[in-house]
Amino acid sequence: MRPAISVAESRDLDKKTIEEIGIPSAVLMERAALGIYHDMINNPDLSLTKTLVLVGNGNNGGDALVVARLLFTHNYPVDILLTGEPDKLSSESKRQLDICRYYQINEVPTATDMNGYSTIVDGLFGSGLTRDVEGAYKELIDKANASSASIHAIDIPSGLNGDTGKPMGTAIKATSTSTIAYEKIGMVEPESWEFTGKIFVDDIGIYRNNHIEN
Image 1: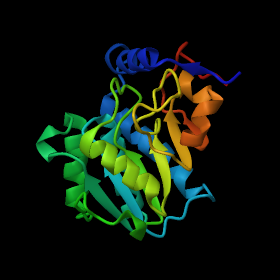
Image 2: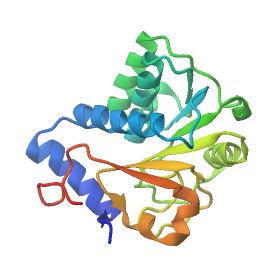
Image 3: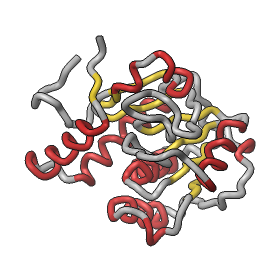
Image 4: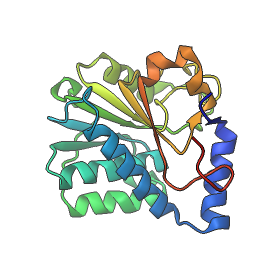
């Protein structure tokens, strides 16, 4: 059986790695994004002709911003869609937005037609979502799902419960997902696979027993 962890364990391992082991969160974010970028460019199910990166307010959005920068600096056409106000971003995500703006990566409004993109990167929510998706975020997820673009999710498709593998109101239906360190236990449930698509597990230096598990 594939190694998998709960959402609570994922959160605890992140905290341990940063605070006890001493690997800065910015380093983990860079490692995660580099793994996601390589998953994307080596995935024949994705076309990177034109990519839209959806950015939430948390560190999942920060990962997405680094992915946008990596695509841009490797000459892949990419746009960024911020789903909230920049001053509401997490501190790590705000730093990454500043870097993207240094590179002058194009930003587009939420009303943008997603059918104009070949791939969408889902960086809206991480695995720690605790309530059903509603309002503008539900509309955005449904719009992405209805578009002609393939979707690549970061860590877990937004709206999918990391412990049960069930959608919370609505959820991204991804072509593929890059999950960080370990799959979440909900992702090994067969009913979740219509949302996760092909799963990549990216080693970024977070280990349950202080060593890698296969």
